[in-house]
Amino acid sequence: MTPLLSARGLTMQYPGGVTPALDAVDLDIGAGESVAIMGASGSGKTTLLHCLAGILRPTAGLVSFASVQGPVRVESLDDGERSRLRREELGFVFQQGLLLDELTALENVAVARMLAGVPRGQAEAEAAQWLQHLGLAGLEQRRLGELSGGQAQRVAIARAQVTGARLIFADEPTGALDSATSVEVLDLLLAATQQGRTLVVVTHDADVARRCARTVVLRDGRVVSDTAAPAAAASAAEVSR
Image (cartoon, rainbow, N blue to C red; front, side, top):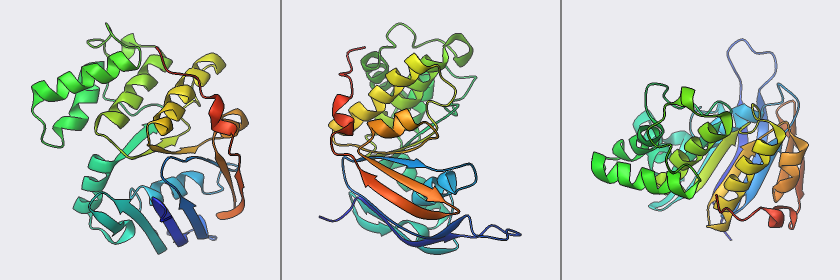
């Protein structure tokens, strides 16, 4: 089966760097998988995620994505094409959410659809449905300062999914949360894979990695292990919040 996302010989050398941040990384990710990327600080985890997502252009190597419009070489796309790919087919959840403080929860989610040309009314209706689905009904008009860390991450997850993204990238999505809230947020992310979405999560947390179907470990920019755990994600809690 053709992978949803594939990297070959992926190399990233930052200007002035002595050693590459990524050193000829090969990686295949299938549709519906949950993959944790682990490693010590400076091992290349976030750089790998950013290259896979088209945020950074690698120094060498290729990234292939099975877009709905056909296979694309992500690293060869121009800035506008990569932005369009991220906007239409990829979703992102970061440690601090990267939401807009001046917008409400509803507006933060709706803007992802409005950027794709969806009228404001329709975008807000879709955003409201996702917020309700993720347990935030009644909080739509609250700004970030009025939400807990876990609630803000739910807003970020809603924003990542409202566009119909097939692949969700999460960079330390539980890093700033307490243990109970971390479990809730991970449940939500893993539940997305039960709906056919694919999850790639960078994490320092071994508990997060154990819940994913695969764990890829980096050291000095190289993949040193790629371990499958077929039953690991089966315990994801049913989302009823």
